[in-house]
Structures are given as structure tokens and as C-alpha cells.
Image (cartoon, rainbow, N blue to C red; front, top):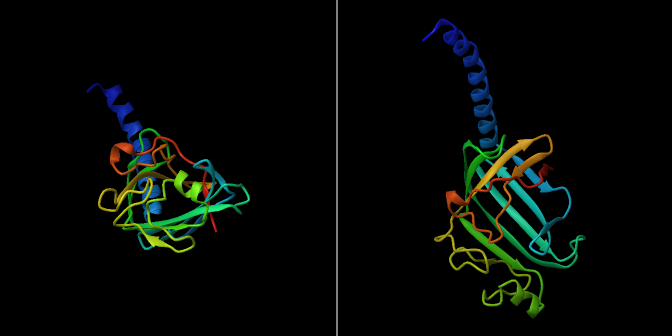
Amino acid sequence: MKPLALLALACALPLFTHAASAADADAAALSRLTGTFVSTAPEPWYGGYGFREFVFRDGMWSLTFTHALDPQMTMRTFQFRTGGAYRVGAASKEVPGAFRTTFDEDWKHVTLLTSDPKLIAGMGMASCGLTPNLEADISATGCAAWKPVTDCGQDHDLLALDDTGLRFGVRPADNDMCTEDRTPTALLPAVAAR
């Protein structure tokens, strides 16, 4: 190697090492998350509005997602809860600052918050055997777009932490992130620490 090329390589190496160690530090911080992160306001979701609440502790995570037809969240339709362990992987090639993260879904629960039969049918929940205002464990059976844990026990997502809060990937229209190839390539608005 020519002396000039060797000098350029020697100068660039500390920059590369610094970038790699910063990414490792970010991944390590995400792996040790502790706390509750919530939507800052109701967000547009599934033809209505949703409110997300994530809890992280000791390498575990959980989500409570509440859906409503109105931005005031008074006309609620359902609540979905899930959780398990999570693992922060490699930095995303498509989204700077984000990491490919696998979220285990060891259990899935849903609560129907409406008794309107047309609305229930429209959400695909008419055949799920749900009783309004009673949480049901759908881990084994699935319901509507939620697959059973045996068919989809992991969400392959993005995870990033910035000055706005904790950010996850944009979910596809079919809500299927069950395999690594379905990992998002863009981020949702942040959920903020509570």
C-alpha cells in the first residue's frame, strides 16, 4: 500500500471506530430500556385513532393499544395487549439511528369496547367469540388481523431513541411484521417517557 493511502486509512480508522462504538452504545441503551412510553396525543390508526402505551423492564416489553373512532378517544372500539422479551439487533441500513429489533409476542389479549354488531363485523371480530368489556386471550386462536402466537410470535420492527422519545417502525397496511423481511423502513412519531 502506498504511504499516502496508508496515512488516509490511519486517519479514517478512528472515525469509523467512533461511529461503531456510538452505534454499539445506542443499541446497548435500547437493550436496557426501563420505563413507560406513551403517545403524546391520539394518533391516526386503522380508520380511527389510537393511543399506544409501551412498558419496558428487565429486557421485557409490553404494549397496550387502545383504538377509538374519534380523536377524543370517547368512542372506543377495542384494546389490544401483548408482550414478551425483545432483542435489539443491527443498525438499520434504511433508517439512520434505528435498530432492527425483534419483539417476542408471548401472549395476545383483546378487549372489545363496543357492542355495535356492524362495527364488530367491520373490524373482522364477529367470529372471535368476544364479549364486550371482557378481555380475551387470543394467543392460541388469533382474531381479525392478529395471528395466533404459533403463527406469529414475533414482531420484526425498528427501534430508535431520539430527543422526541422512543420510535418504532411504520406498520404495513396488513399489520404483518411476523418475518424479518417485513421489517419497516420508516419510523412512526415518538412515544414519550411518562
